[in-house]
Length: 61
Image (cartoon, rainbow, N blue to C red):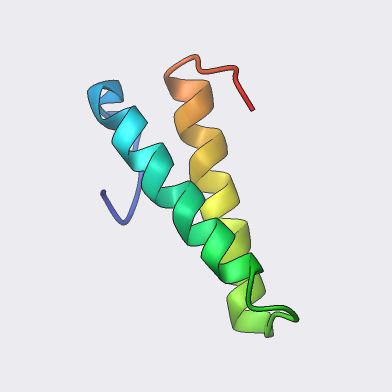
C-alpha cells in the first residue's frame, strides 16, 4: 500500500488496501489509551480509508 495516497490512486487495489488499513486501525485502537503519536496515526489511517472510499465510490461501512 502506498504511504501517500494521491489522485492517481488505482482503485483496483482498494479491497486489499482497505483491509490492511482497517486491520492497522483495529490494532492501534485495541491498545487502549493512545499516545499523541498513536492518535495522529489513527487520524491518518482514518483519512486514508475515507480517501479510498471516496475516490473509488465505496459506500459500505
